[in-house]
Amino acid sequence: MLTRPSRGRGALLAAGLISLTACVGCGSLHARTTLGPPRKVVISLDGEPSALYAPLYEAQANGDFARGALDVTIDPLAQGKNPLELLTTSQASIAVVSEPALLAARAAGAQVVAIGALVPGSLESLISLGTHPIATPSELAGQTVATAGTSLAAAELTTLLSDADIAPSRVRTIVVAGELNKALQKHKATATLGGFWNYDAVALTVAHQNPSVIQVDQAGVPSFSELVIAVRLEQAHHDGSLLRAFLQSLTRAEAATLADPQAVANLLARINPQLSASFELAVLRATATIKQPSGANSPFGFQNPLTWQSFGNWMYAHGLIKQANQGGLAITDEFLPGQGE
Image (cartoon, rainbow, N blue to C red; front, top):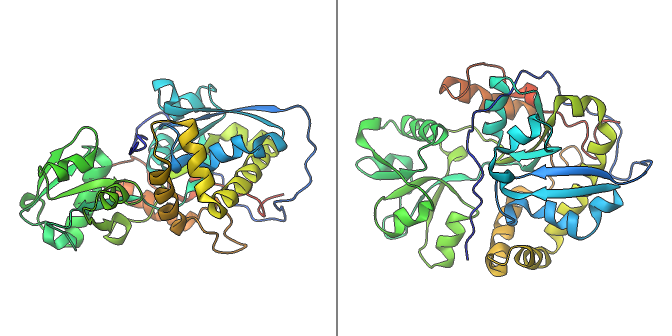
């Protein structure tokens, strides 16, 4: 069955101005590390085990974390709390959150920084059914669009309509609690905004409903990372060895996931019996299109500060954050294999 990740979108939380910048150096995946007793790492997620978080569970199951002298606990759904709240209060070592959530948190004062991208591209999309496909945003005039009702979704819709030169008054919106796909299947809306092209659209494809998909970053919204790996600024300053070991372990697990997605889909189904291994495999194969390494200078987890700056500026322009210049300063790549020391 489909168990769609329920990670928060654009959550506001204490967060702050951080001036870490990307650092390129001479490290490598095989850098020598002095291993001692296993170091405890608690990872806070806002979703159940699924293909979205596949490398984390693969690294834990196949021993990659253990080989890096890391004793990792993965805490799904963040004990009912925002992962960034657990991170900033030192109840978690790492939080996996969206780029919009991290930027909103930083703008509100939290001393957090993204050290890598788990899902490096945007997943959110405008999705419609094959029986009434929306091929371009210009076709939304006179139609009903279902969203989750978040400020991020509202800003995305405003951008799509502006780019298509459509007055917002010509589009009706409804707020949907739960699965956005149900609004389409029950004919409550012509399209949904905010569903993931690698989950919601795949589920509709599996159900033979021939979805039409427009990714938001192809319709005027700057691209952003759907999931990033966040730590406290103090950790970035003082725990470099641990963070490098974590990202090296995760890089090996990501390579294993891309090489054998069937094995990882089976693993996820064992961890979370509510999942369908065949569906998770379809999701992993779809997601692989944005996760293949693009070169030595862009390893797994790489983040482009210019892309972050562009999205941060967009958030500021739409009132999602109250401080400009939050994008490019919110990341560091110095702990990635091949980067930093």
